[in-house]
Length: 219
Figure 1: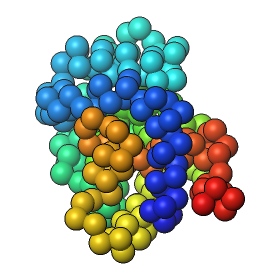
Figure 2: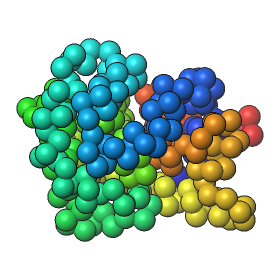
Figure 3: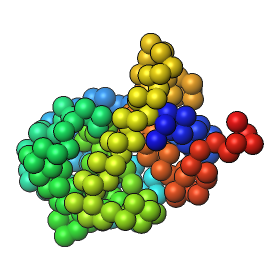
Figure 4: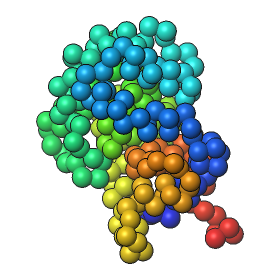
């Protein structure tokens, strides 16, 4: 994925969603994100549940926050293992990292808690917004990836896209990073994670069916 493709998808997403304030409100709360990685409370998990309800998972169970709190001791060590990783910089071929991703992902859905692959990806994203990319059922079908191993394979693909976007962006010789540049140009009040720009691109081009890049007659 070239940077120009990512920028196109991000531009369309920002305009379709009026800059996605539901997500921005939660992601910009750095103290909330820090607690999620260390010792989250029932209120923190309730905020996650409320986010899901307002972000396409309207039927999320009312006791979902309690379920997440119960499962936290099971995934705690995995989350701690993954907090310092980034999508562009991590080694997704490392077996310990793979085990932590698969274990956490699989335990954030049925039969351990309510939900499936889509919900698990959305929740996992907030445990480390610099590593995990959200997906939905349309995106899964497009990539033909399912379950915990499928999500790991999906991250491999997203990592390749991210690295290509970074490399093509660096050819512009601008003194900023991709996420900073796009966040500023699209009017986001805080720095939007690179992983979310990838999700925005997937949602626009796959879920909503827009062109994968700007049409030639518009360029």
